[in-house]
Image (cartoon, rainbow, N blue to C red; front, side):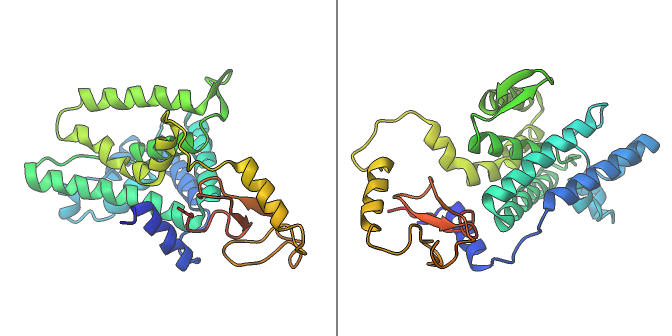
Length: 276
């Protein structure tokens, strides 16, 4: 059975034009606009939050507008906007436009679905913003780049994985202290993180090295021996283009694929990973 992440990768590979390029840029611009509007008119953001009861009464814009409510409205809001813009654009570059679009829209759809389920089952209308959607992006970034350092509080160098642990503590605290069923919303909102980065989380867990584990140094030497009599050094495993035919292309190897597989710059972030 193919896991959801593989299905998403295949869909995006078969539909290379799917997605919203520079999605994070538009979201950040909307965040800034909503932030400015909230400074001019304090109740403004309350009219933009997701609320099932009010949506069913005709305020349908709340189905989308809650995505643009800024994750921070304090004095450091602009710094927060830049931080999430950087994270979002990095994820889009890593996954490709299609997969990043699916990631964000999946989180939004799960949030809306849970909000309506709670309303229809319990009668409670939960007001929601985009806070947990951005938090899921942060967790995904930390899973992909755990050893990247950032300046916490502007002067404390800290690796992303440790910063993620700090955020996870507050994340769990909000689940424990928030009344049911609203306390389950954070878990629902970050399901897309588990779908996209479950493999990275499993890779972080300590485990014994099996005989089937790839020795990349040995595989690299084998590939070089096989290519000794060929006219090229690198060949894309997707499109078959080589560095001899297309010297303008950049070729890299994918660490998530099983084996030693090379891809051109057009397919390094847009291919179905080899599993055998």
